Image (cartoon, rainbow over all chains, first blue to last red):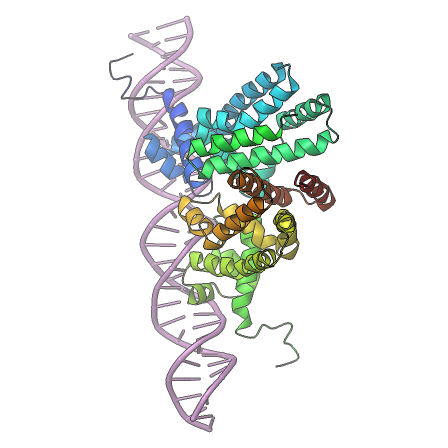
Length: 189
Length: 189
DNA sequence: TACTTTTGTGAGTGATTACTCACTTTTGAT
DNA sequence: ATCAAAAGTGAGTAATCACTCACAAAAGTA
């Protein structure tokens, strides 16, 4: 490896660079508003290379989403290992802020995909892991002896989704942390 | 007016027709994914007419949004005239379902604009009426003697936003009505 | 070194984009 | 009926879109 390794991308690194630049632009301007040409220019790469690696634009989106999904799975694993039902619910509430700090662009992209074309929306929001997330919350509310664990879960997911949207617009994290603590207080049984 | 009035659009009606077709397509496929060419074809109109009436594509979006804003203002007026603070809050919770039944496409479009390019997002989500809506909720929670009316309001708006998103994806209204009643129960002080 | 495979390039493809403009038709007022 | 203003047309514009392909450089393997 030469001394220029930090300046000049070795060949294989270009693939990763395409992914990170595309993630940034998709999150910032939306999938439909980001052209493969712009991605290639900002990544310092020929446009053809995108198609060599990812077949087409949607293949690039697939690659981005699958990379980011891992952090969601890791967080979910942490939740499953938490023995206290109440703490599991708190972890769920913390999720948007936590994943936002870790991978802001990725989460912005995933939430925005819901508002792209119906085909793209369907493709990325019917994941198995989300159903497991839902099941874990239902069992947690059941363990706490709540009357309607399913409805509690729906309400909480709705809250978490809303928090994600809020984090996207608002960069005042202190304000949102205050709101999160306020919400947690509602779950003090 | 001829007997064909229902089949052949009179000249001025074409403008309204462009708006309703564009609203439908923007809501269904997203603003960026809907071309002026497609709009003109589905509206049975020359493409040039769109630009004669609305200057450019964004002008067409403006026209759509301003038409739809009226229904939001009407609903807000109804809320202001409600003397019971608790009933005002219930009206706020009912808002997504109510406006969704009345003008589904419009509301889907407005919520999706948040995820378009930052410029478009800024333009349509800093409205004065939204601030008034927020103020009304804060005063309602204050009237009810709640400890943190500002945080209660943020939480409720987050809930309402989440409900809107849910209504967009899910067409099972009974399920959502059940959830809405469940949420209302949380506000039984 | 010699050879194959992988990675990378950049000019070029046809299709589609938002938008223009010279022109015609319809409308409404006199 | 006359005529100007408004509404409407459709062919045409340059720019951009996702994507292809013949070719070259680099990397892996022996």
